[in-house]
Length: 110
Image (tube, rainbow, N blue to C red; front, side, top):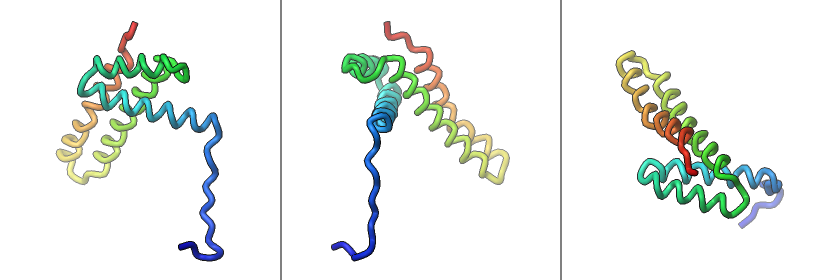
């Protein structure tokens, strides 16, 4: 049921914005999959690049950005801890994401 006078019009993304959203989603998928099965993630990168919308380098770059973003969020959480030892422990939560980012950045799919 709609109430009169209320309007929540959200503009649709432009083609360029849609492509950026799709690329970010592809990067998220690859980063998540890489942690469990790098070979399947590499196959996904190749599949996405074969579609022609993105290059393999663009997909890997997006995956690196996703991993770094997760690591930075973990570090931001650590910055709010009041106890230095808890802060140090929470910093360690960023390590797997940063290691993943390095693995993705150095991946050679050729």
